[in-house]
Length: 451
Image 1 (tube, helix red, strand yellow):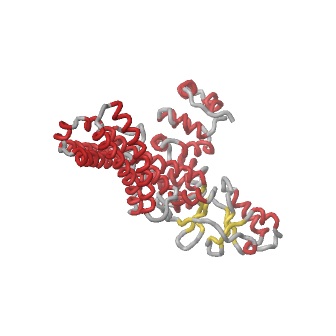
Image 2: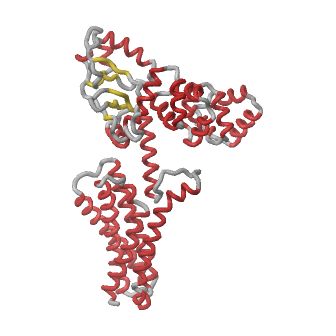
Image 3: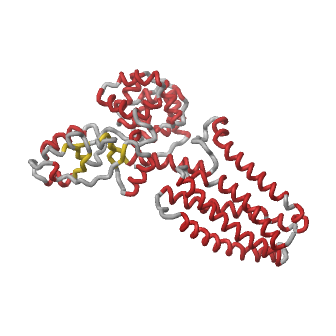
């Protein structure tokens, strides 16, 4: 398959076909393009053009396109469709995707759309999913799955599976339940094919099966599926009944969204925003950390102002202030980034003191190496005295060790308090290390140089 490439020429051709109402040419052009690529095209069109394409194509294709669109583009398109047209799209979607779209509709529109869905069982499943918090396994799962009763024999099992599989896009696993619908295990396809048709399922199913509760956080579901290399995982309710399954494509979305959120938080953006959001939304997201950064700068300036006499006597100290701030910030961000990644992957375990001790030793080694390089450069490049170079070098080692410890401690501390540790990276660590770094720098210089 040739990789799709969105070009200005392609967009221009589509816009011309829409303008001239050349539907046959437009359909011919879009016929062999994957629905995800069509979604990419629609994201570049205006609202009227995007709606035109959605109404032109068949629902079996446009339903998938809708799930791939940018949120604001999909919202605009849905606003131009009738309740019946939206229901036709939902009829073609798995229940999890359909519920996500219904959840984006205005409240007054939801009931109208649900009532227009022809498959009443499908509509009921969508309504069931809307009960769950979107930030939970229940809000992430789909109702489509293949399940068999432990009391059935293999022949009955195969017949029932054929019926159920018609509504399932991809069969990852066959789940086994009891008469009350409680999850008992899973069924191997190999065992099913090699076992007598009269054998009961309870005699051949595998009792060991990974599962999650409907109230589990998506991040925990992603961790479990990643750890055990699962393509799908069953979801049970509070009393153990099988109520749905979560597939790998949904988890990939969770992982991507979590990575984007952590990246923004690490960069000092406190809300989930996009590049094309309004100036006001972008300002609200950036303002808190900018304010913290400014207050940190004011704090550092206050510390420096208290050592004006020292700067007059030893002006070389002023030259190396940026060195202390930059080094402290970089070391702190490096340490915190490793810890945050480890916490996200669940690879950091045990007492906090062991991790702090390791980072302290690592900071000491790095600090000594940096100080050695600094002593050579400062003495031969800046012509500083031996005493000044030694004072600044010792301060540099101390600043590096301090930054490494802070960068390690804060994410672990926040994580133990139930706060996302990603908030510790970026501006928070950098600002705190800037202030402490300056204080350490001048305090050590004062002690050695005697001002």
